[in-house]
Image (cartoon, rainbow, N blue to C red):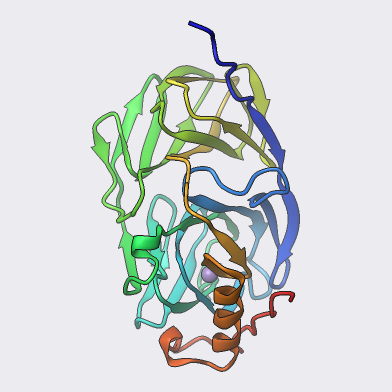
Length: 296
Ligand code: MN
């Protein structure tokens, strides 16, 4: 049998940006070199940042279509409001999963009473064509399946790992896992060969299949691997994200995921005209965010 050369491992440099009034962000996806890993299409690592002074996180009402947003905190608290009437505070170890479907709007802010530091991840999952026009929904999971594995504490955010399944409602075969080491650790994680995977460091450093990885970089592993070796010299925290390669066409503009440029333009224009299908966010003390129009 001729051997097929394995697709190369990629290390992507996250792009540094600033959200709202001074929230530092490292955006690993989308990148010039890679658009998606499974259905994961947007990976932002925010903070750690001191929010004791000033107004902290302030992201005014804005819309989404065609995707799910995942909020995961390492430190701090965020208050979510959406057009379904949800008002939900999230803390570390909890998951907020918002399904935009045909249209939703939401805001995110630091609550007035809050811990001094804010640190976490905001991730998007593209919806498949069969679900992109679904009714919008919001799920707050105060607890997730958690297990110990070779010295690691694993939290299952999405999908299933070692027989533990997340109650998060996702619509393509996916994995979202937080790996936490309290001290120097060496572990082997079983991977699904039909998934591609990425590792996003949240705290400190680790060596993954021989590659050193620190926050601000994303390790991408092509499909066809059945395990991942992880080694740390001390405490470390990262996300392991995976999924079946997303075979459908997918386009992103601003806060929208769709199939065609026309759909993206229509969503931008509809939001700026405050079309009913995006609903209204109540109770956020500030203006809604206007959509930039896509080129062309
Ligand atoms: Mn959003």
